Image (cartoon, rainbow, N blue to C red; front, side, top):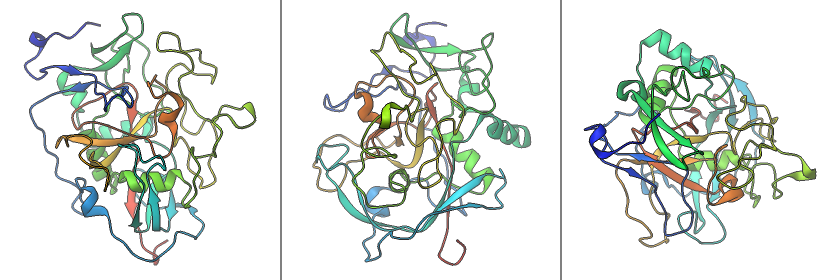
Length: 339
């Protein structure tokens, strides 16, 4: 384990703690590389759609119940069908980057019940021989609470979250240390794609136009029960009251009304679209062409605290970045005919 300095690698120019106008500190480190472009899935849609390209106004309403289904994708995963419709996206507070709210039409789609797990990702690696960005670079981002800083840990990757010589990743936990590039590659192999962050939010709201703050309701701990894996305490002392210090098994906290799991906490989840301001939010921040939206919060500390678990909460990272608290799940196109 080592502290990265500018001279350690020509690939990395700096470590950036991204702050959005003092709204919150992302629990991420931006590992800046030369631009790496990935071509989106040919058969599963464009992975680089901007908000204005995705937004489409129609009159339908998402009033149909969602259904848990199994489809014949290459990774044999179980997915949930969402009928789509005219929905509201964003926080009611109007505070960028999470608001102001706006209406958009979402087409029917499928979403994986849970994040891609280590065992699922291992099958992809074994069948394709793919090497992740972290494996190519030889290191990945891990936060060291003792030194109170992000570090590039040698040998940290999807197999060894804390570097070789440490405990290997557990098969039923969400895979981590995967970049956006890696997530897209997996989706292509599986015959799927990444969800847009708007599909993701709609799914986190259980396919309904409701005003709930969290996927399960408005209370962070309904009935005093922990419903997600997230940080308790300050950044120097995670209390682990939810039962975990780092990742937890996918689905450990049960299913939501929709049938999905892990839509808050555990790991941040990559989305397909660039991170850009919402309509009518003004020039709140400059668009970084190489950044992509992430959603859901994670087990790790965020300055926004429990707010990072909210269905509308947004963050981002660059496409080559991999961290110990970032993963993904897949989506797929659907229609009323093949639901």
